[in-house]
Structures are given as structure tokens and as C-alpha cells.
Image: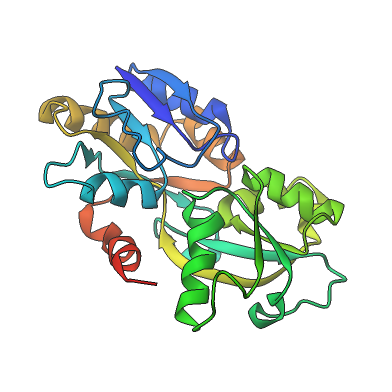
Length: 257
């Protein structure tokens, strides 16, 4: 069994290696994007049995054809963040340097804003959807700069290479807990909340085997070693989720710009 994750380096590789060991899966990492690029489908060609992917990639693969190649595995994490109220949701945090004169979304006009990659929900689409919902033109309102990762976006804000960045709230929280420079960045707005990144399985993954994977992961949340890995990633636990949890993403992505 092969587990492909697109969540590192934003989330620690050791977390996925441990979860992979628990379900007896060989873990592979794709660090280039937050999920399969449009037109790419590792679940259709057998390259992956399970995958941790961005919500936008899940919606893309689930709606690309009338015969989807993936299904939800039914497991998601809960961020260690009081604003989530213990739910498997997160935010796109817009950060600026503490001394910046940018103190609102509107003040991003004409500025350079670091974004993760074109697939990322928290690091790109949340910003794009926020502009759409406020009647702003994505092409002219601000300059979106793809950095290739949330950590790279944070580094560019700290270096002054961009004026602001939109960051996965879990990644930002985790790094802020260990780096004062990141903790000192100002969060001018939290975009969302949005459902967290889902674990998916190829569509023809045996139902009994998938149920066992789900059981093992949900029960693993009580293990000390798993709790330690989750805590290190600023996560509070693993919970069961269904398709309805991702309906908001599907609706948002289907709405014309």
C-alpha cells in the first residue's frame, strides 16, 4: 500500500512516516505542490492508494469526471487553535511584518503577497476567493507571488521580499511557537474557516481495507507517540469526517469568478 502526501514540508515528514507505519503503508512525499496538479492523477494510474492532499485537489479529482478516481478515507486532523472550536477546519492567515503599514485586507492593494502554489487552498485560493467575494480584480488588485511553500512564504515576509503572505494557519502557528520572528508577524486577517486537508483513497480501494485504515488512524490518536507528533505539528487530534464536510469547498470552487 502506497501513501502519497503533499503536505510536507509544511507539516513534518515524521508525522506521515508514523501514520504510514500504523496502517502498513509505504510513504512517499511530493513537495512540489499541495496536491496533484490539474491533469495529474496518481490515483488513476495506481501510483498511490492513499493520499493526503489539499481540499481543492480533492474537489478537482472528485468532480473532474463522472467517474471519480478517489474517495474520502474519512479521517482528518483538528488544529490546535482556539478559533477552530475543536473542529477539523483551518484558515489562510494573512501576515505582514509587525511594523508594516498594511493593517487590513484592503491595504494589500498594489502590494506583493506571497502565495504557496496554484493548488493550495489556504496559500492561494483563499486569497483569490476573498478578492472575488469583495468584488476585487485578482489580476490588478495585488501582485500574487508563488513561493513554492508556506515556509518559503514566511521566509520571504521576514526577509522583506514580499509585503505580506497568506499562510496555512496550522503551519504558521507551529512555526510561531518556536520562532520569535514568526510569532512577531502580524495576522491582519484569517481567511475562512475552511475544511482541513483530507485523506483520500483511490476509488476502487477495497471498502473493508479502507474501514480498517480509518479505524487504525482514529484509534492511533490516543497513542503517546502519535499525540507527540500531532502536537509538534500544532494539531490536536484525528477525527472522522464525511463528504458533507467538503461541500463548502466544492461550492466555492464551482462559483464563477
